[in-house]
Image (cartoon, rainbow, N blue to C red; front, top):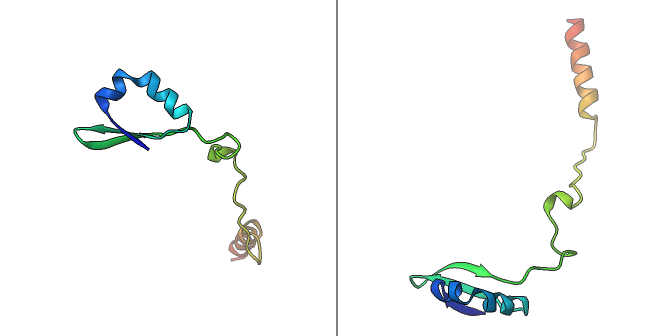
Amino acid sequence: MKTVTLTEFRSHASSMLTEVEQGETLIVLRHGRPIAEVSPVATLSVRQPSWKKPALRLSTKGAGLASAILEERERESIS
């Protein structure tokens, strides 16, 4: 991991991004405080958007919601 100032990063962005491509991680400082971390991108197979990941399936034992609603409507119509 390498630390650089914002001014240095702006002046040498091309060469620094080449270092990032080769696996280096950069911490960019402004007024001595870290403001950004520039790191290589993870491979596409490992890193995919959440909308492309399989959805979480929730299930419970017992009557389904639709049947519970229909039963409730039936009870209300009888009353």
